Length: 39
Image 1 (cartoon, rainbow, N blue to C red):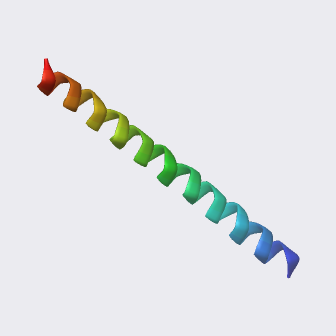
Image 2: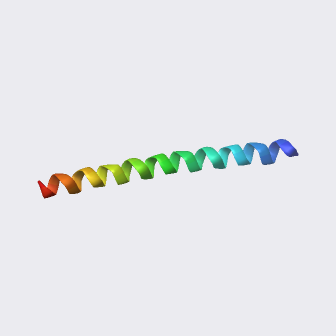
């Protein structure tokens, strides 16, 4: 049953990485829009 926890852990790590990348892109996009509004 070790493989179940390994697959689950790998899946959660991948999901966390994907969500983190999406959040980073969203935050970066917000920063660009805020600077565009200032100019």
